[in-house]
Length: 186
Image 1 (cartoon, rainbow, N blue to C red):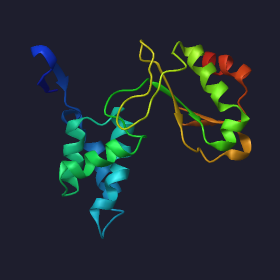
Image 2 (cartoon, rainbow, N blue to C red; image 1 turned 180 degrees about the horizontal axis):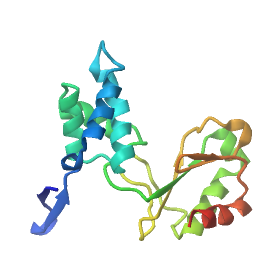
Image 3 (tube, helix red, strand yellow; image 1 turned 60 degrees about the vertical axis):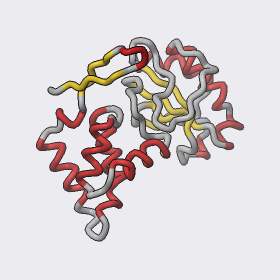
């Protein structure tokens, strides 16, 4: 595992691990298989590779941007602009369990704002902290276990309000249900 020194504010030096140095042959094979679905334009595999990277490492660091760009014969800015445009992608680590609460109209009218507030309170986060994506991690507990954020439509308007907890869609959430949902995650 290789580390890099990064110059920070006030002359401080921080050691960071490059994610690309931890790529396994299995990871490369899965990436190649994803790219094979786009024989006309490898560039079209940008989003699938970003999802693959983030699912594997938890976020996309500079080495991930560079590795994906090289794999697709693109420049790093072509990948970085996707990471910073789509709020699903992150440039820093989020919690081990990410709770994404839908805030679009059907869910908002059914109480998703109260549900998000209850999730924040249940895990120990400030319910009024803002998060706008664009590469930053959502509000995360000090122990790194939970992150809670609002997201746009989760495509289950008929069972609002809904949340995506990890990879599981939870429907018809009532504020009173939140404490037990969080307890089951502990």
